[in-house]
Image (cartoon, rainbow, N blue to C red; front, side, top):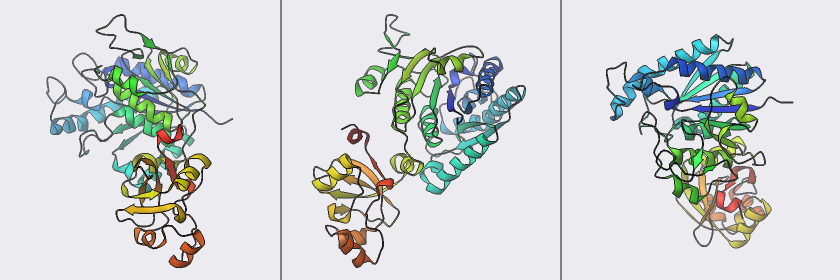
Length: 374
């Protein structure tokens, strides 16, 4: 039986002391729980916040800096402190740690996206525990993933994880902020993430030392589910806290279940990371074939297009009402589509002297979440 693959995300508030510096006692407890999980036969990837929080006191800031330059400077100092602490703590348990610092471009660029997957796969194969964080020191749009909650969701999908654990300082998702409303109801299990849940949590703030509140974790859970990965949001203590969570005994909220479907790596890139170069409008017959029958998009079903794109570029697929129903990677350029739209596949191949009957092959086509639920 293949080893189960778990992604664990640890927030800043679980790693720092009251003054914002790195709390080695807290970190050592997390390392002990991660080591225990690995020793039970799981493959583990850690997404850890805490670089900015760990570094700002070293640079003399009285609290977390608010400027981009301040955050990037403290991240440059704090990341080294954070990973060294993890490395030393995990080494005590006989575990080798590695560091990957990612920016959004590593996901947008299809080649780099594949390289990240290959690197993580090789590290896991050799029983290394990868530690991943946003490369805050060089990010041009501040925290380009939004926060490490979303990064953890995207990584969990990329590596086809079996489960995502998002540890935080609140024991799950509530209908309102439990810090201000002591009678707030906690959700123990959520089969899906709905718009109502976002509305309930949008005013719930996160910790002062982190960037992600409960809305952030809902967004991450929603993304993870769309990638086929159920998740947990909550807290825990001790060596066996991660095992308790995996056994259904966690102090928090479970989101989704094992019935979710996995997207293949190329489809993940198309759905979440690829730049969009144009739009393809399709007729009702093509829309039905794609949504209901899982078919490829053929030239015959194309009515019109917008933008300029080349072979291999990604476009949005829209219906007659201009509603986006999905994305796909083109087998033809926009100039080709101008010539062959509405034609049969045979006619299209003859006119373009190409051997691809599909404008977009099903393996390179991803429906929107709304369409997949129909």
